[in-house]
Image (tube, rainbow, N blue to C red; front, top):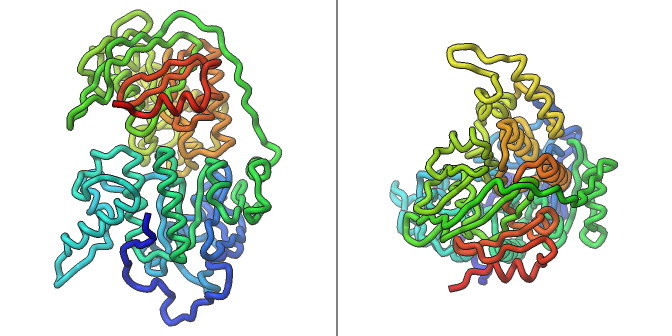
Length: 523
């Protein structure tokens, strides 16, 4: 892969300033705090970003990582304290101002426009003009070059909504690379990527370092951090905890620094298996552009059983869950829930019969960002729980009590259930989506990448929740891109490739090599 990236525009330097290129620190914050109603997101934090290195920032969800990155990218402003760039104080009041100074960000949640094509998403608000008009031909060639660098074989004029979420993540990265960036912030850039795509991204990061670009990198995949990081900084509960160079860092140090004395462990304990709750045969779903999203899928899921679904991007895991719950209409096949056929029922009827889905994309499909934590959590169960009846007001006391009990059970960090759900960290938002599903009193729970983008502590909480659901007699099916997670949690592992089930393995028969081999598409 070549180190030659398309040239950007402008030098990204402070107007009228002399950059302190000899200093190893390019960005520094001094006693920076950020306050929200009822929440101290950052508390007098001193933080340093070292020039031309991969600066890994680590912490549990709610530790303040994303808040700090939003301030460096101009999305948020500090409540107090000062940010320095090349030794000089700066006020980053907007993303446009930050980008003029050479700071770009790739957000954890995709910040794209699904109704636009790939090229327009890459150059939105950063178009190339010639004689007063956008130079479409030049932008097309530049977009194609960026996508080629990321080994994404997609025409730049393809509508973004036609791409899988992992490929959309690569488009987000291409957009950041299209700018004249000196400091690139990557907030969970690999959360939706396959292993091969992660390797491509790491190659790109190496190229950027050789071009003098500084990287700030946030991820909850600890092995990934050790592979890519040069310097490690840990936040906990909105405060700076520690900073180490790569040679001094280790995974045990990271975990201890992140969670302190709250370190958690998960021990697999199989539940008693009961009668089959879900039986599927011949399930087939055709893609709009031809081929199979699901191809003659058959499976059985029993009470108290935890089944993991592993596969690469595009294997059909999300399509399987959406088809089973009625969000996608199958072209053929039978689905039985507790002995009753449900393939003809819409999603809401399957929900009422005992199916629940926690979707992969919590922002687009799991939450309503403008609504409160309480309303988000009870949206699916207003009628079933008796919180609301037609023409009558919602029973606020009954609803609020149920929500508070679920918050306690899931250890959701929130000071007031009336706060917007977007005020929570990513891990706590995911717990709200889980709580919404559990409040419907399901018999079968589908969890599509339930630990995507959450920290090691929140992951352990989710693992315990999955185990508890099985112990209570629920049937649980979850998908994951992480081999170790599937092997740790599941009683049985189903592997998918090209819309087919290529392996159905008991826990004792699972190993990494077998899973990888079974997940590789074959003609």
